[in-house]
Length: 368
Ligand SMILES: NC(=O)c1ccc[n+]([C@@H]2O[C@H](COP(=O)([O-])OP(=O)(O)OC[C@H]3O[C@@H](n4cnc5c(N)ncnc54)[C@H](O)[C@@H]3O)[C@@H](O)[C@H]2O)c1
Ligand SMILES: O=C(O)C(=O)C[C@@H](O)[C@H](O)[C@H](O)COP(=O)(O)O
Ligand SMILES: [Zn+2]
Image (cartoon, rainbow, N blue to C red):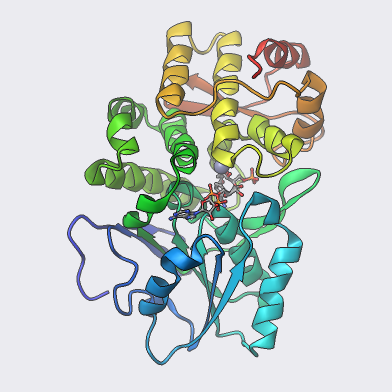
């Protein structure tokens, strides 16, 4: 890009030869040639969905060089479409266009599009370039960074996938102006997650900034997105393929993924399920004697301030949770491993939970 616009920031995900930038700022999408530096060749396929296309496809095209051979694929919307069949449609479109190994895929949309396009890129002709252009808060603070790509399976979330890093992440914070409030709240869950797992100061700042964030106050937004991306980039650089510390990014997810899969993908938003799951993890941490009641209340209060659910679905039994949780990717040798909190800002991967403790926690957790 020629000039850095006011209020914008650049971070790096440091992965040696596969390092890449994260550009964050208002109005980045639509700048002429903004995407040009990371194209592998002239062939470009922009993949988006039917909600995002009318809003941002034209701006995305305007950020590509005039001589690029650009194709567009507009997929249906929603978590229920995060399937191998949708990814297959991307491969069909690439082959029909005669695209070769030097093509570049652009993921324009939220985490569903980003995860699918990344996976399509990882497999097409054994791996081609892709760029993340995230347009939801959740995808701007989490899913566009770190190279986890894939699709859901009826039996479990993100069960089919690959680690495949993008060449760049371009975050235009202005795209959040059209995002529904419920989706914005879902994104806040992952923002809160970073404070809970790794950064108590950031958590403290978030507690005071929640109103500004929900009002889309530009500087608060940039700070939340920048801090989130910086924390994620640091963890991914340390542990790209989740052999250790990266698992902390899964706080609340073992419970959350169980809710998403049991309810039917899309009924509960990913961030909503993760929010409730983080409260469950905090309460379990308290039952182990690690958090005190005041700390659990802080978790409850910040989730409430973000307009996230504090209860789980009324129709989910303890067994409904356990069946799904036993399939979690973090488990080893049938031992359930959960991310818990030793204190606010300090998470750990724990297998100290007994079945009795877990069952009692799920049983007692509020239903709605
Ligand atoms: N790969 C990772 O590391 C990672 C991390 C977190 C979440 N995820 C995955 O991300 C997915 C959730 O992502 P999400 O919350 O972005 O959901 P999403 O992609 O379904 O987007 C949410 C909704 O907002 C719409 N939308 C997108 N941008 C918009 C805009 N600017 N204005 C108006 N509407 C817009 C979408 O069409 C959709 O209806 C889940 O599948 C989750 O598993 C992946
Ligand atoms: O990047 C990661 O690592 C994460 O765990 C981020 C999570 O927010 C995200 O939901 C991720 O897709 C979960 O991955 P999974 O392997 O637990 O399905
Ligand atoms: Zn998540």
